[in-house]
Image (cartoon, rainbow, N blue to C red; front, side, top):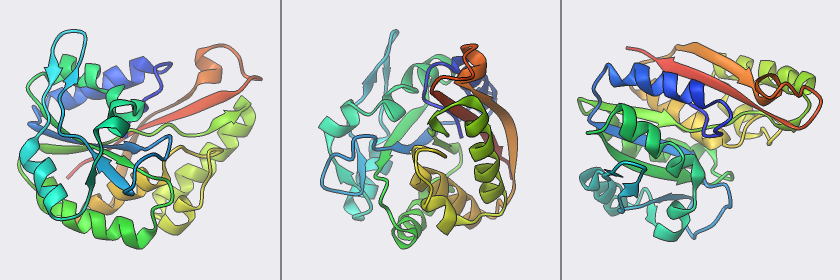
Amino acid sequence: VVPHHYVPSAMIADMFSYLSKQKPEIIILIGPNHYEKGDRPILTSQYGWETYTSKVAPNLAVIDALIKDGLVGLDESVLAREHSVGGLMPFIKHFIPDATVVPLALKRNLSLAEISDFVAGLEEYARQPGTVIVASVDFSHYLALAAAEAKDKITLDLMVTHDYEKILALNNDYMDSPPSIVAIFKTMDLLGIKDFQLIGHNNSGWLNHDPYGETTSYFTMAFFK
């Protein structure tokens, strides 16, 4: 789990630097559909992503299979504008230059049953050697630092206890994509990985030295076999 907001860019870089040691071949990248656009609850793209140096290639074998299985829809216009996916591509290209990517944008209103069906179909691809799953999620939004810290404690407790129904009921005070968090947790459940390690926790109020204005909070987390 990594942020997509660039204020904590060092947190993002640290996570992808750490991930590069695994030499992953495929990155399944899950994030919010911020603008709730498109006619399917989960959308993908078959296009490559231009970065400052070169292009990040899509993994068309997995993308086309997910489309064929009816698990996701194809919408290039939505994915082209989705910064939860596009914003991480420069980090992927820099730290893991040979990896291919399966970009997925999830709408907020996905139910637990819909997410369960999706991850059941995703499982066989998640099990492929050299595959990692990255959830691109920012946490508490628009609150002053003290209030955001209180919300983050609640969020962390819900993630530790795997309370998926309550996570899906959270609003932007807590995170921007509850379905992305539930999707990565439920995929890990299927893979037999129940626990995660909290790598980092921060807030733009600390980073920008402005605890009283609107802030965004961030968690980085990793699951290990």
